[in-house]
Length: 205
Image: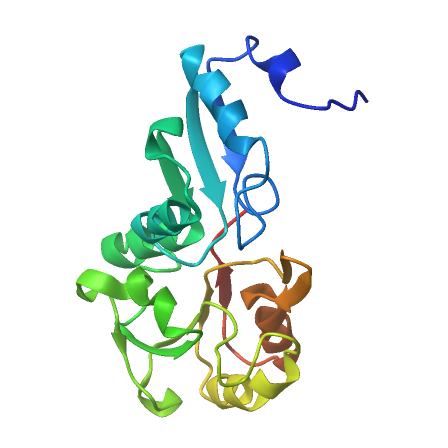
């Protein structure tokens, strides 16, 4: 296996590039040094660049985050996120898992992730007894991002009602700067351990 110092040796081999965001373009806080220059070199060669991310938020939200980090939108052609795919599946209801789901969801995750249910593709309820499925987008500010165990009571309550889980990011952990934080996948692991008659569907790669 060849280890490359940059993308330059590959630049002319392909017409387009699909690049991960987290850990490749940024570290959750800022764009890595040299990324803008590398993307600019690809665009100057007429290459198409699309970002692929497990972020549990819609593509427009991810684009706004990159704007705040200072990445010029002229340097890439599009974004596809786990959140965008989840939103499309909840909107279209054509996938066999999503087709029979009701619209009422109990949510575990931060408010910033609610773009995945915008345009009324789902409605949030507080009581698992009134929900049709569990929407898992990851840790929230109240229970923290260091340890999945504080989420166990909420997961047990959902499991008690055999709620199917939609996990909008199968990653278990992510590095944000120098901090290792849990993701929705870590909560999905607990839900799987709880057993019961529910199904789990992870949206992402």
